[in-house]
Length: 182
Image 1 (cartoon, rainbow, N blue to C red):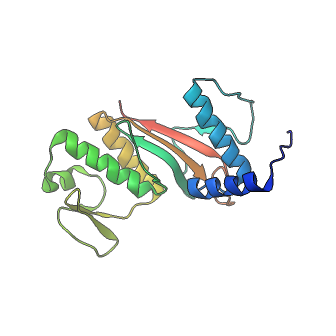
Image 2 (cartoon, rainbow, N blue to C red; image 1 turned 180 degrees about the vertical axis):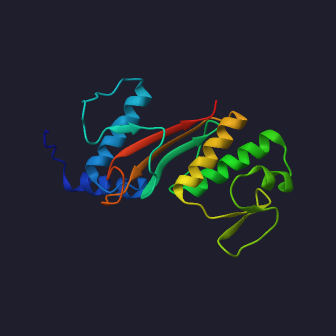
């Protein structure tokens, strides 16, 4: 692998970008910025088989020890979504908008614990834009419900996420992506 040298100011800027994007290392930040620019230009990125930093597209990953890098629901990009719950809330809002459900019907529709009123105890958080309270979810369960709603209401969802650099993570440091819906 070739070494790339940058001046101190550029390296400091790269560290700032990495922090803002929630990426641990400057090399991974460069990888992401290059990938995004290649997408913008409509160029196909190089893909080295077996590259340990390559993106994993999987149907059933273990999402423990992950964080979201970027996501979109119904073609709308989420602003800094790092947590799986923010993706789930966005999907619930899109499903509600498309179906016109009131809070009672919405709470019944969900296959996660929810209450059709404000309740902020026992792990529940009130979502005023939805008119319901939702109990916290593990990443795996938040994605499962997001995927179910996306498929049922034909709302496209795309997620890029990264496993943390931990031994317990399924693919430490690697990036994965998931898609569901229309």
